[in-house]
Length: 110
Image 1 (tube, helix red, strand yellow):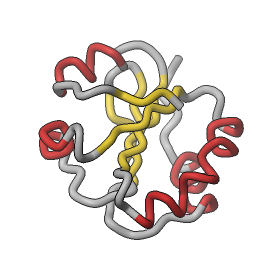
Image 2 (cartoon, one colour):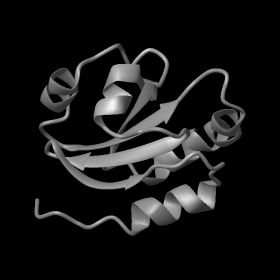
Image 3 (cartoon, rainbow, N blue to C red):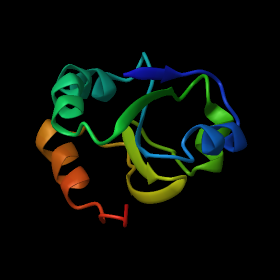
């Protein structure tokens, strides 16, 4: 999973303007983030049509505010720069919950 450096919303949208992306918001001190991290390689392998980007909440606090990400771990899916869906709250997430979220995303026209 590629770690996103500190970016502005405009820089993020430029990076994700082509293709399907899954943003994973977390922080090193977050125990619920640490809970889901071991499952992330399996989730990435299962959903190869998405490019997964790790977003450090503390490093990108302004971006999180702009995107209304006030709880972690959280996920936001994009296709061609448009948001497809979000799984954003402060609750611990299981592998099954993340997979259900991804499976329920709308399929945009290619």
